[in-house]
Amino acid sequence: MSLTSRTALITALWLALAATSGCKDEGTSSSTGEPSGDPGLTFNYPAEGACVAIGTDPNAAISVELFTSGMRLRPPGDCGTVQQCGHLVLRVNGVENNRSAVRFMDVLIRKLANRYTDLTLEVSALRDDGEPLRNAAGEVVVATRTVRTAVSCTSGAGGAGGAGGSGGAGGSGGAGGAGGAGGAGGSGGAGGSGGAGGAGGSG
Image 1 (tube, rainbow, N blue to C red):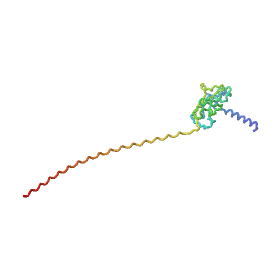
Image 2 (image 1 turned 180 degrees about the vertical axis):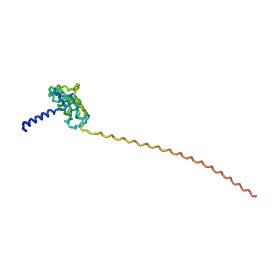
Image 3 (image 1 turned 180 degrees about the horizontal axis):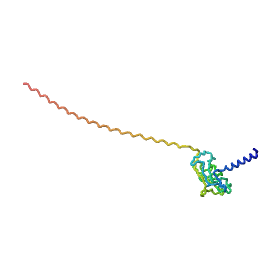
Image 4 (image 1 turned 120 degrees about the vertical axis):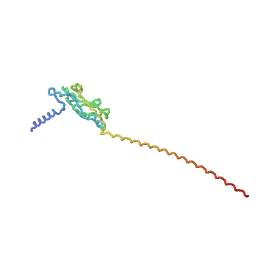
């Protein structure tokens, strides 16, 4: 194959890859160039209510992944005339934490007032004019997720303590003693014997 033919083939392959490498769920209207469908955002990671171990590194971060639909993500100022287009803004507990022009971003732990706590993550899309991207119903396109951070996350709670033993039964009282038997009556004394008669005098 000649160098010219090889270069043309590589160029064609690169263009085909570039045409399909964007966010696959954007969709595009062939007539207007606008992404088709109602714009939407959903979290893919982390899971709702998850415990995320961040250790003690001051520069720790939590990776965030989102799914987008009906919108195009571009750096600020690069949307041109496309209306359903913008970049993502991440807020943690109501305070801005990070921005991204792709559907992957990090929660920057160093920006948090308390690194070990419950966190509410909120991601919205901001247009080039500074206004939030809205869906067909006029609602701001936003995704929320709640997680908990800790030095480490352990599975399974500790077992409950055993119940205390019951006390022993009280002893029974002793039986009362039997009454003493009455004494026998004394026997009567014998009567005295009569004196002997005197002898008769001699004649």
